Amino acid sequence: MPNSPLAKVPYPSGSDAPAAAADMMALVMGMDAKLVLPAMDEADRDAKYADAPVSTMVVSGPSKKIWVKTGTLPTDWWTVYERQEYRTGFTFLSGWEQDTVIAIRNTYTTEVRIKALYTGDMITAKPDSSADAGNITPDIDVCVVPAQIAATVGEFLVVGTYKTNVTSGAASIRNDGTVRVYDATTSGRIRTGDYFWFSATWNN
Image (tube, rainbow, N blue to C red; front, side):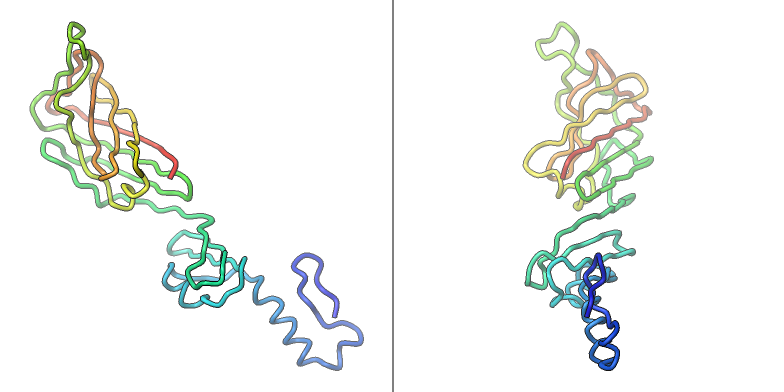
């Protein structure tokens, strides 16, 4: 039988017509490995398509993910695309109140944005006369991000920037998920009642 030009799926033609059942079976079997298949999540994917051939593609609308089979084992899949949003699961520490938060985890990058209200005592960075001008001692922990986000940080700190009503500086997300403030503009202050905006983006 001839094959289709792109997917190379066999189809009955001409003299193949008398063997209709066998030809239709060949057509269906040829298409089977070339379809984009649906799944709810990873567990559903592994259960349904454990025996799928290499290069099979599976998509999940509910999970917002796309996978391609890379080996013979049921769990041999590569994530081609994913997008997960987290607006809950942030734990704010003493002296801070949550306003607005979002974390977005894509296939290759993660982004965190935080807006919080500072309710603790005023924090003042070291003045110009200090050898460590601008430093905040001790460092100030703001919140803990969801575990799924912390898992992408790895062994290094992810350093981002923050701004309040009257100052700005550097803060990080640690691999335990803690958002920590290190410094501010020289003699800068984070005052009781100030809003705190923080953002960071990194490669997974």
